[in-house]
Amino acid sequence: MKTFLASVLELVKRVTKLELFKYLFEFFIVFLGVYLAFVLTGYQENQRERDIRIQHYENFAVELGILVESLEEEKRKLDKHLKVVDEIAQGNRPDIPPSDLIFVYKGSLVDAAFNSRHFEALDAKIVRQIILGSFGLALLEAQVESFNEKSTALLPTLANREECCYDENGELLGHWQWYPSLVQAIYRLNRIAHDGILNRAIPDLQAHVRRIRNLPPID
Image 1 (spheres, one colour):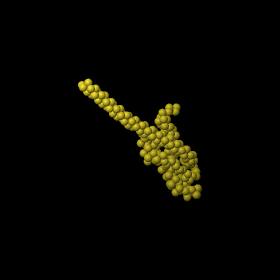
Image 2: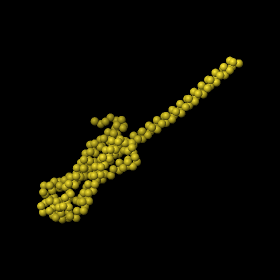
Image 3: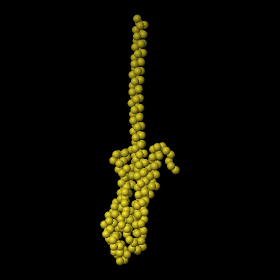
């Protein structure tokens, strides 16, 4: 009888151990599944953030490239105005050309990124550069707008070239005094924006894309 009871107790212990092992194993499987799901979700989120970052960097670089071309086109117009300014400084009386400057950059990609809060995933240095660069472009836009408004207001005076813009001593009349300084200011801002975007901003964006993709830098 004692032997029988001992066998039953031993069997119970074995069953209990098996059940305990079974529960522990099931718990481990559940834990592993939750952990892997968490890791996968984190990986997918990081990939999504990475893809958004690359997309904005690449699109922004393209948009800045278009802006560079626009600034270069405007430089050709400004060169014409600078020649007029040089002639005025030499005491000549050149014809002042009518307004022909434009500013076409609206920063649509930047606005879209900010509005969708995608910049939360971007590099803080890039965001600071964009914000600081926006101030310079906003000033350039304001000065071009001022130039066009002043030129348009004085457009009727250009009809009579002999009496248009100079006094008897060859000096610019008071209502044209703004012309040389504003042309030079717009030219300086144009060149600062052009060179900064072409030589620093675009290469920096391209370098960030290569780094995110784990590609070697371009020498």
